[in-house]
Length: 65
Image (cartoon, rainbow, N blue to C red; front, side, top):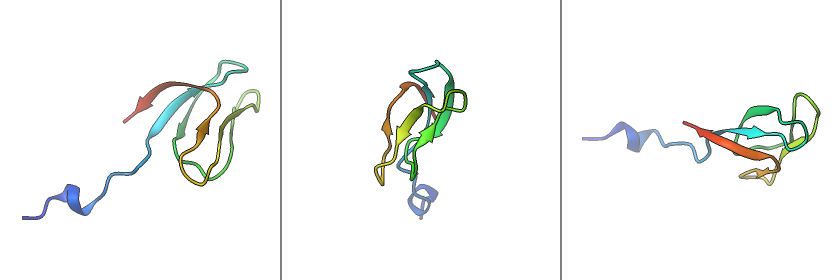
C-alpha cells in the first residue's frame, strides 16, 4: 500500500512572521526566497536571497504551519 505522504513531498521551507528591526511592522513571508523581501511600511530589508533559504534580517516572531 502506497501512502500519500510518500507521493506528495513536504516543502523544505515554511511561512514565518518577521518583525522589522527598523519600524516594528510584522510581515508574513516564506523562508525560501529568490529576491530581497522589503518591509511594506518603511521599505527596510527583512530578508536577503541566497538562492535557497533566505538570510533573515528582522526578528522571527513565529513559524506558521
